[in-house]
Length: 150
Image 1 (spheres, rainbow, N blue to C red):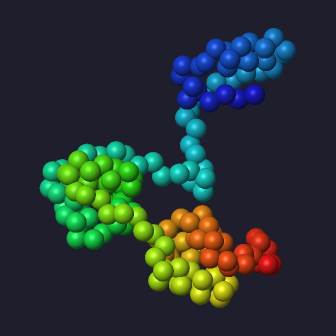
Image 2: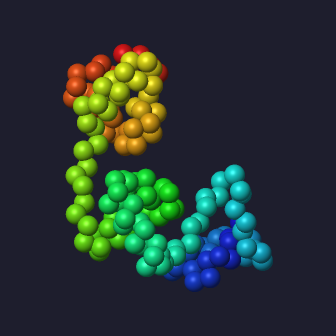
C-alpha cells in the first residue's frame, strides 16, 4: 500500500489505519515525491487576487451600464458573488433578476421544440438549466426524458 506524503499532518484515524495495516503485515510506504495529478483529470486552480480601486470602479460602472453580474464575473474571471459584493459595497442599487422574460420564454419554447436540451437553452439564454426546465413545465410544455422521448 502506498500513501501520499502530502498528508504532512495525518489525522488520528489515518494513523490508526497505518498501524492496523502494519500489524497485519502490509507494507506501508511513504511516497518520496509529490503526486502529480493527471492533466486530463486535474482542475485549474485560480489564485485569489485583490482588485485595484480602478478595477473595482470599472466593474461597478460596467454594471451600471447594464452588464449582468454573471457576464462581468466571466469577463474578469471572478466569482459572481465577488462581483455582487463589489457592486453592493459601491452602493449601487441592484437590478431585479427577471431571468425568463416573455420574450426569453418564447425563445426557450421554440428551441425546446427544435430538439434543444434544457442545458443547451440555458447556455444560450445565460440562465440555469433548472430555471429553463421549471419555466417550460409551468408553461405546459410536455418535457422529454433523457432519451429524448415524451
